[in-house]
Image 1 (tube, rainbow, N blue to C red):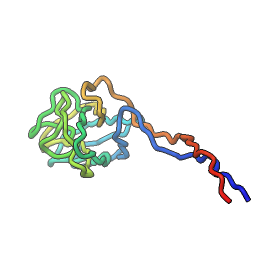
Image 2 (cartoon, rainbow, N blue to C red):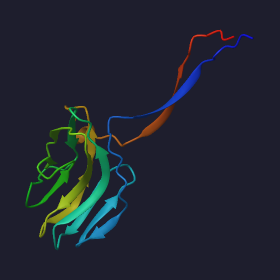
Image 3 (cartoon, helix red, strand yellow):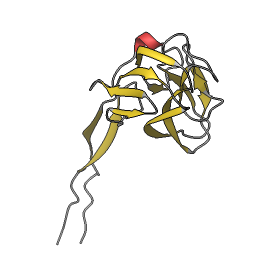
Length: 159
């Protein structure tokens, strides 16, 4: 009896330019409100009564891959006002973006507002991308899609 193997399809996940799936919902912590705008951006308002961290999502930085962490409004700072952390404290965007070399670890992306900082309608556009030329204005929301990629095995007669 002869049999044939037929082609098979495979599903793959792909995302756009922004690799960060920001999932934080609107919340108020230490006098600061972080509003989820529904499009991947966040608006920050208030005066921080303590250093405040808004954990917006996690990302695995593939080893030996360069990423750009971008999305903090102009005027941020590493220690006194506000910043966007895309991995570690030392790798933070304060308004111009920063390039980070992946180490294979899962990292927490977060918006940080420091004690005493007054923030009024700051628009954060958090993005982690492999496009090292990306700027604050290049923001695009995270989007994921599943596509079916067909691949075909050659027919193999089997007795």
